[in-house]
Length: 258
Image (cartoon, rainbow, N blue to C red; front, side, top):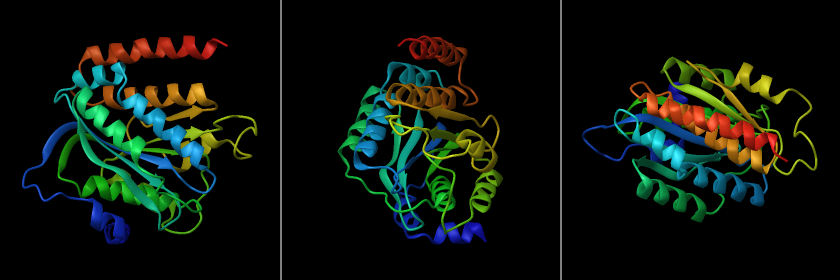
């Protein structure tokens, strides 16, 4: 039933499939599913996009991609809000080096805000699932990279149903729990957001939650998350894991500094 609901969503009808007769093979299909609900203001939208743009063009990310078996990944950036607002900001893009990564980053920065409304996390996951299922790309791994400042959902497809449908199709769901961006007002919710993500949203082999509680930590968390997702693709060489290990050391030193 969930699959029928998902494939009927208007966004999916417009966004999936390009009419190609042969699927393009990549190491990873990655949906960057970014929070654009009403708790996220326009400055925070720009902040999120700038950091994802910086991450996808960072030398460590490009190195990890280059050490994959096929030396390419497919990425799309989607902003989610209410049950009728899951908007593709940047469509599926093959990233296989600096030029394609820069083009993705520039389009991400240039587009206006698209998502809005109260949380409908189940619909967000369902649309991400449909974007993967309906494209003309064959990835060795498939990941939904969900970010948000809440695990609450209001209306639409239940989170549990959308999550179960994605996991049944061997799609991994990872999470970025946004505790705060400027931290002047503290945590966005009065419960353990990381635990809620772990219990209700993420899933699949090797799934994980990364947290961010400030501008510097957000930038580092986004990059580390992408490194872990790219370097974990089957067939990715030891050199990519070496890049991840170096980044872990760098992150630890950076976060320890004032």
